Image (cartoon, rainbow, N blue to C red; front, top):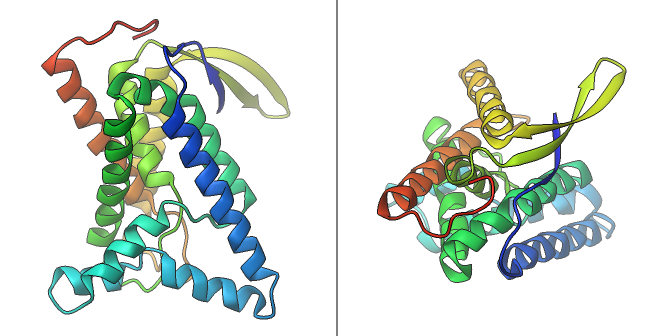
Length: 236
């Protein structure tokens, strides 16, 4: 299932969401420039290791044996790095569909803080699972997962136009957010459990970053609902 758009209008221009998308695209263009330079893929690997969230480096900083500034830089930097065009485009699609409504509900500055904090919590969740890994975490997936967690709580009945593949056939359906995002989270849980104990030497998907970010975002969504109803939104 691939979400394409939601029927959940916003009251104001999603400046932060658009800015985050622009920043991720700009950083990816830098990655392309690095990989097309003299060092090729080896230079890109060094770039990602320098600016990505390396679990062993973060663990060392948390234990007092590493550079906290370097660890923080890696956590923040990782939210704007991506491993390829499919990774970037998939993340930006999810961020555009679901981020604008969460930004609309929280407000611009609170949403930016929420997004960065969600990404940090997501990275720490993956570090907790694999604290000695030398493979850098890259991608906005953790921060976006936090956005999805907030969205499913705030707008569970919002209609999401979804492209559903049935073998060789494809069909457009309108699916409630609670179904499509709940299914996405279930897949992360199943894949995350299946990945426990597997080697990460060659990298792979940081499922527990997705899980940690989603849970953190859902908790924030619950706090918002408990604190007050706020503006009622279509589909909310």
